[in-house]
Image (cartoon, rainbow, N blue to C red; front, top):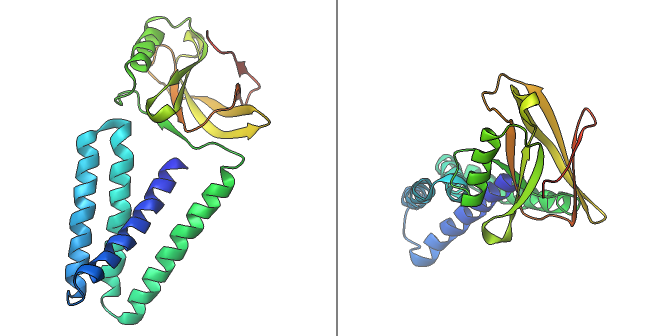
Length: 220
């Protein structure tokens, strides 16, 4: 959900940059305006790749949104009607998508699942290594990340080796955050199956529950 917000924000930024070209030069032709957007988008994507990891991914995704606007405008250059239609649909779609996500987040939390090789907080990386060295650790642990976000590191324990974890959804309910997961066999090579969930907000009480009814306890 969070990545969708970033992409839609990129769409709006692309439209904003396109509008700025008219402010600086009303005589510039349409293809030069599109070329300007392409340069901005590729610079943003490369910048995200240089940052790397979880921190750089939103930057690159925003660049992809700007590039999408450039592509739509390139198509639109073939006719004034196409241009207006594409721009209108893009603006309405972006604003509609952001509004829909915003309403959904009143009852939910935005989250991402981090790759194990991402540049995360050193404490999280160290704890993940500890989990793999000690498969007896089972449950979840909470960490603070950058920008006051939170990270939940959930491990299933060695008896569940060969399994993987999927987050089905995260909901807020009267001071409680419910994390609903599904575990399934997929021949994972982890000694202790683990997932790292990055969240933008968290209620005081957290419950992590599997579809089979298993409730995982917090590790102090």
